[in-house]
Length: 183
Length: 361
Image (cartoon, rainbow over all chains, first blue to last red; front, side):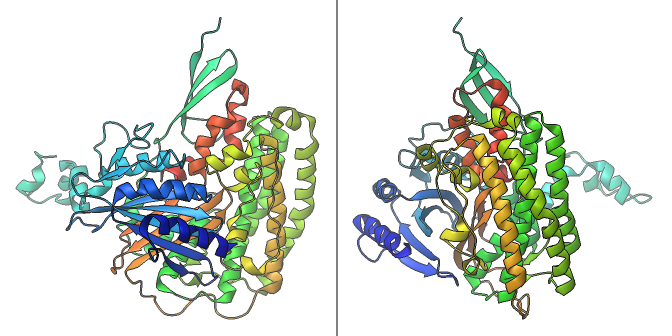
């Protein structure tokens, strides 16, 4: 079964990207993992219907920054499909300004929640989604919360009041910076 | 009078005491459409996972879900092992299966118990919970904990099962077996359970496929997908068990299927205890986790758990993403609740064995 599905995947990917675009790895149990890179997000619109045709099931979608700390720009999105036991991961490079990707909900209905989630976490622009509401995050929160590095010290300062520092410096002269004002 | 009304259900106390808001359009007592509004317990665990090192994340992922709490660190560890190529000792593979299956039995009994409670059959609810207590005691005796077992570590397992512990676990299973058989009979034949749960919450096979549902929800609708069989991990390739399926796709068939799976889990644990190979239970050396990416999957009590790991060569993941089985099953509720009665909403919600906090992470 594994081999049949691997061949179907090879064929579907070859139609869009040509031969040799699909790399395989395996775990110790012989489960196969396929990896594909798409450098143009629009070609997702060519590949998605072919994958739907061979019975792929969308498992989930992962968006990520190319560099976790944002030292260099750029996002990618990995679409993880299951082909009757074979995992196929399609990684899509996004343009920088703005990071934009088409929706694959016409072929994979359950992409709905997954796509809404990466929009709110990374501020990625999604085209032609049938229901582009917030999924988990409240409407009054800023978009792209996972895109920003908030150092722990910054977060803790925000949460500390002058009362805390009065306890820390109990019986001593309270330094000016701890007297509040910004808190 | 043909006007429809909007009935807000939730966010609190729909089947389980976890928050999910249902915006339901009703026509008299009949549900016409359902909209879901999530996000009430979004914890930002994926952001936390990108701040902690690989070892700290074992502890973190165990706290994603209480009832699937072994599946998460186990699958996360598999993703790390797939990336770094650490070989897991044979004995550890069996120990991981035992932990997974013990959790599965307890989880399934919890779910069918809640179903009995929602039908108003509270003595059956208490009985199911009492039977579950056998497994809770087993967890406490073997692992020292009743919910989070803390069994999985990168490269193997934390606690061994020696001869005396194995004997204790066998004893618990012996106690459980007749109770499970009796419970199955009650859930299968009791007139109250049958009246309230048969033929409601229907999910036809084609909808199960198009909505990509997983786990017992998919299997009760005729989609025979079980990761333990389709993409075997740990020691499952060497174990003999039957993937449970049904074609009725209603609330009743999902509950019975879970009970049958619990019976299979007992068999799996017994086989593991019989076949348990000798040797170490974890690797000695601290693994190097190279830059790269990997995925891993396992069959949690609620269905397929999926982990994707992206590493940049540091000791902290560049990205760690996971998807819990309930994630897709929520949206299938829109099919299951179509034209159902208001009184059946909680029963139908419970039949997907919902887990809100792990869906939102």
